[in-house]
Length: 168
Image (cartoon, rainbow, N blue to C red; front, side, top):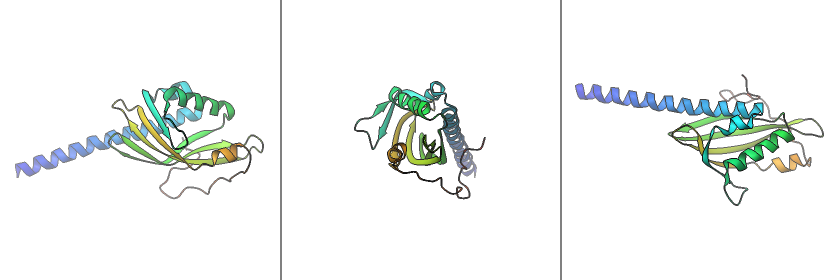
């Protein structure tokens, strides 16, 4: 009976430690999205490891942290209203999957807001910095940015999903 108690206590302690780690990962993700949405790219960069690699289906080569930050700086300069969030973050170990990540943009001509989707698979290092990000996009960004077509915003999220715009 003492062995059974030891196993139960050990399992509970491991599960609790794992759960706290996953909660920290999710909090880090949401914090970094808020920082990006406020436009502080320098502070946002601190959430990424120095040796960060960004792998995108639309890019022939992986990009570095400085590449990503330059792109995001241009995004914020082009549309200061753009913000980013994830409806759902699934975590396990040092990995996260962002389900229905979104950028909410404003069309510069019509001033209409629209949404583009992507999904990310993220690997964190031991310091909870993003080490590797693999992104998959819906491909709608370019036609919308070029004002070739203008999608509408989707209906409110399903129950249990994060609302958008993000609620502080």
